[in-house]
Amino acid sequence: MNSTPKSLRLQVGFFGRTNTGKSSLVNYIAGQDVSITASMPGTTTDIVEKSMELLPVGPVVLLDTAGIDDVSEVGEHRVARTKKVFMRSDIAVLVVEPDTWGVFEDDIVERAKAAVTPLVVVINKSDTQPPQESVTARAGEVSSHVLITSAVDRPGRILFVEKFTNALLAVLPDEFRNEPTLLGDLVPAGGLIIFIVPIDLQAPKGRLILPQVQALRDALDNDAAVLVVKEREYAAMLTRLAAPPDLVVCDSQVVLKMVADTPPGIPCTTFSILFARFKGDLVQLAEGAAAIDSLKDGDTILIAEACSHHAMEDDIGRVKIPRWIRQYTGLECAFDVSSGRDFPDNLQEYNLVIHCGSCMLNSAETRSRLQKAKEAGVPVVNYGVCISAVQGVITRTLSPFPSVLMAYEDALEDYNRTEDT
Ligand SMILES: Nc1nc2c(ncn2[C@@H]2O[C@H](COP(=O)(O)OP(=O)(O)OP(=O)(O)O)[C@@H](O)[C@H]2O)c(=O)[nH]1
Ligand SMILES: [Mg+2]
Image (cartoon, rainbow, N blue to C red):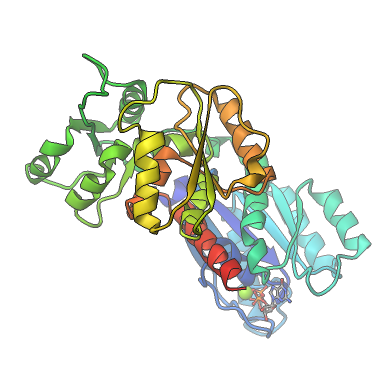
């Protein structure tokens, strides 16, 4: 991530009067305190930048600015500096209070128009009062993307970040509109990736499986090199390299060995996680993985297979995953299995759905199943992400995707909180 040059990162500027909550909003989106906030107007005196990965938009820089209504002596300099940030912003976010829209807001709108910078309006502090009609009306006139929020509403954060990201996606300038890639964005051009591919009895004769071939192709399309190795030779191979690899990717079944053999600091993940991200499902699946930690004795888990197959001895879905869940949680849960085209209608009766890698389903079908689970309020995880979780290495395998990791950790906290209450 850090090797993405700043100019390739989408720059999102936050503008508005002093005290509207620009800094609070930047912190809210970043999920951490990067900018100082205070009830006193004029708190932010210089530009504060936060680089982060905001999926599925990609790498972004959030730019927190000083309020443009600062009339103090030094205020003039600050205002001048804020106006400069305007020139740098690819997208401008105008932060307003529920009851205030005046010349300063209009001024920002004019600047955005003049610079042909897309504008998103955030009406903040909605916990203090509902937005006035005049404010929502004016906001709606100047932007088709108006979000109402409260930067102090912690439980509402994930939903807001999703809405905010969708707004950014909707107004994203073309040059930032990347085709989704499997892994090309995770390594610099000329980088080295190691694939750890177990060749066991289940491996097809004489070839690699399609996801591995697709990942290989994606690496080549992005001018990276790939070294393919079995898990047994991996550690020895690492010692032969002059520099550490930029990324290591393994089959979920050997994730524990990969993490054990990979020195900290080298980003590593699994094919399953790469594909879940590629299809746009990773955040929901990571949140589903967090639910494993709050399972209780007697909970019922649905193992959902997309294709009907003969269960093999030591079958991953029917045997291994239930065993790992038992070992990881120390609980006795009940497992139901559904297979084939039909996804049960009684999802709300389950405490967790563990879905197969859905190699037989297209993205639309996978997404509709995930949506169904979301509507039923049931956490859902797939085999690959689940394996990382029950092997206790998920924070490592999600580390190449900071915003996903954040969503996972937030979900863990949320589950803990609901348990406490
Ligand atoms: N109730 C409520 N308070 C908020 C909200 N957002 C921010 N605040 C509070 O409003 C005050 C100002 O927030 P800041 O984030 O510092 O505002 P700012 O726009 O960055 O202000 P300047 O840096 O001075 O321009 C702080 O006391 C925040 O805690 C919100 O959604 N609801
Ligand atoms: Mg501020």
